[in-house]
Length: 446
Image (tube, rainbow, N blue to C red):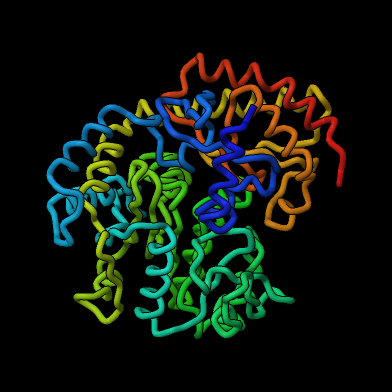
């Protein structure tokens, strides 16, 4: 059992740092040997030993239609047959940009339809998108400081790997080796969902703050939605201060609604107006694609029309564009309805299984993204998420894995469903829950 995966991991560790090319894949927080996947189809993934798993990772979000969706695969094959990369402009870049811009629509103050993304710059990774958005905000405002929130992940560029300082409005400290302290000090790290902390930081540093960056809904410390009106209040504070609001929808964009998590705000009245958005995951359909977009007067500060430099040889790669276009075109209202109902079913089933075993927990939701926090009190920020009984998750995870269900290998990650999760796949997940809940209940604190 697991012999092939073990051998592959040992081989990988000799050739690749830690045996992985992204740390969470190493199973460091759950223990054991990572599964090396070789194939995926619909709601299932298959490892190198031929084992089948119902997948609740979905490539961390982009497999919204299910793995290897026929229309997406055909679009990629057709594009690849014409050439893998040109290093030049292609019509498909504009097509994907227009598709993204048209989908992000909401109600304005007078009931009119507003499209806050007037221009889009395509890049290859979410890290690149957020890094470029911050540089653009600094270039546009002529200011240096950035506000971010503890527990929010915006990629691994230096200024975003900042840890909270000792006070609410103090400069941050390096959150990773290799990050110079002066760079980290250009970021203010504040507690999430605390609008008073934002006001205090702006009162102290306002004329130096270029932007506030926030995940539209937290999905990198487990799922944690913003308090009602929090994102809108950030927009108001930023604009009153002459700063920009950057809404990071790398994980939520085009997954929770056709207009991303921002689209949910239209149900609360006139939509608040971020100045810049960042996207990834779904717009690439499983290929490495991301983007930043927003107001035209801000976006035109990017080269070649403006002084803020950003470039990428593989940006707008034609094969990746084909995958993104096909994915968005097939992400219909019916797909979103299925995602929502499937997430409802599974979130309730997991909660009921844990409750039967007396495991204290909270169901964490942001649209159809969900996760579970092992705590009696609903969390509101990163400190609350860190204080949960994280040690209950590894046995829960491995019990599910043993039953053929692949969960995210960390309690601090979101669960993702797809349009391909049918009754059979959902049934297998539900059947695996009683034993997993018992495993969580019997776990002991370290």
